[in-house]
Amino acid sequence: MSLTTQGLPEPWEQHQDASQRAITARAERALLSGLMIEPDAVSRVVDLVSPADFGDDDHGKVFAAILSLSDDGIAPEPETLLNALNDRRHHDLIVSLFADATTAANATHYAKLIQAAGTRRRLRALGSHLAEQEDSSDPAELIERAQVELDALLAEGPRIETRPPSRRVLVPSDVEIARATLAPRCIVDRYLYADVAQVVAPGGTGKTTMLLYEAAMIALGTPLWGLRIEQPGWSLFVTAEDRRERLLARLREIVAALELTEVQRRRVFDSVIFWDICGSSLKLAQLIQGN
Image (cartoon, rainbow, N blue to C red; front, side, top):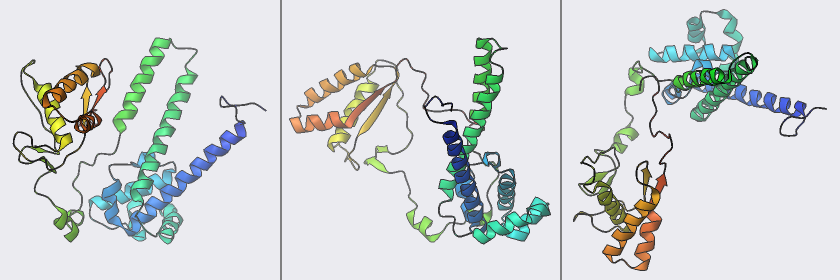
């Protein structure tokens, strides 16, 4: 009996693969069934999963048809779906999916599971393809080819819908109207909001020191520039320029100048934290399909 690299029998590994495929197949059916009775749920999953992610080709075709009908504002009822698929061979599948339909409450969970399974399939296929060429290709060339394939896989990413959804989906509910806010969550009154912002100034003018001071005040809940702190809390500095020790030293001097109590001092150092990524190639934003 041969063993895998984990020391487990091959039949056990095959059983695990079969079990995972069964779970994914059930998730595919559950997602499709839910969307058939709750078409509005399409908007929650359209950016998470694509027809190519489905392990069952017929399931992928049904999902593509549901997306197409949703774009036109048409509910994916059984007969409508069969007409959209233009293939009566799917009759039994559509009927069984509709018979199993209960709710789309877990649609997002199922969509993420299906998308992850699709990505794993493509990665396994890529690995097998590269392994076949291992003996005949130069290692550097093989690595370059693998990088190209991985970049292409990454570019597929989540499905980005470019066409507007149906009018029915865009009409706001009473709950959405009641929850709508005029501005992002306010952190410092009339000054700082939970939104994207930028501090621009020449190097050496004290931008980082100012931001460290502001973070300390927000941690303490003490008025900042004479303005009330609406949401005291902690701050994370992701630094790719100044090392963590330098930022800690600056914060230490700010705390000393403020003449804080030991309790206040500890609160600042517990709340103003630093993630040092200097020298790494980590990106906080990534390009997907031109966006």
